[in-house]
Length: 177
Image (tube, rainbow, N blue to C red; front, top):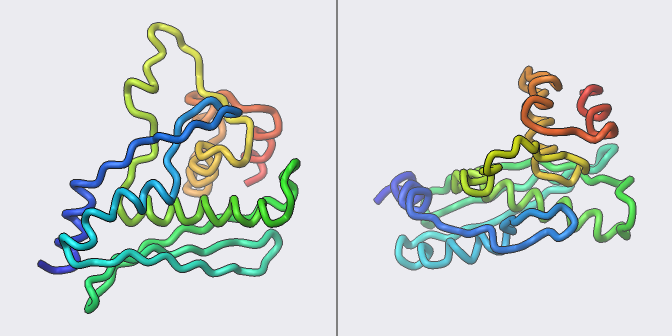
């Protein structure tokens, strides 16, 4: 099997439930550790390794460029994620701010590599007849990152508002991109 075929095998068979709960945001999520644990059965079976490399880019704010790779010892395939460190995050010590950004970057790099769709499944999104929108209230919310990327690719804040309720701070932040 080629490295492409091995990665395709992982991508099509990969399963990792959102088993962790964020009590503040009231949502379930999976961590980078959960993703790595779910890949372990494939490592020996397919003769591959998974490696994560992080690079701290010293800018204002600092940015983590994280690359997840799958290799068979001869060839490798890489996927990258870039996440900024929110130095203004209230309630966190500096190591927690960097650790949080590092964790997000690892999770997104692995998600990119293994084609993990981090959107809610239909059962989780089912409002059972209620039209209540998910609210984005924090820059740490994964939906905020998706919204930022959408705007950077030419999307509009009004289109985001058709899907999400935005706190005033988040709307202002997205409007300035």
